[in-house]
Image: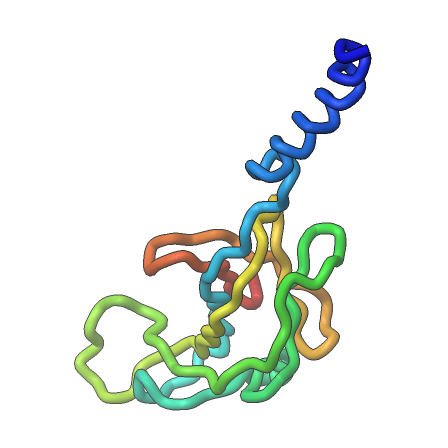
Length: 144
């Protein structure tokens, strides 16, 4: 009888132990930054507040966004902060106003996925690429 009980309970106990040790648990979410460079090529000083222009006016302070996975599941959402102008070229042009992109950077916490996409204000999703050059980040350049 003891062997029969052991045979019946052992698989259930092992499954419970493996689950408790993270065998089937989803990976813990990670903090990172979503960085989007909008190629508006405006001429302005670096470091000033900006927003998208032309077909990218939906990139602006308080625009709603979602980070989604390949299946469309929302992993993070919120509102974009104001953009900040960043130089288009690394070389020093020795002038106060330079060609710039408008960069939007927002901290998020997301679970590990094979692919991430960004939806801004209901517009079509933009692919995000992992990039650790300046800390953990998901990056896109618009237009790509």
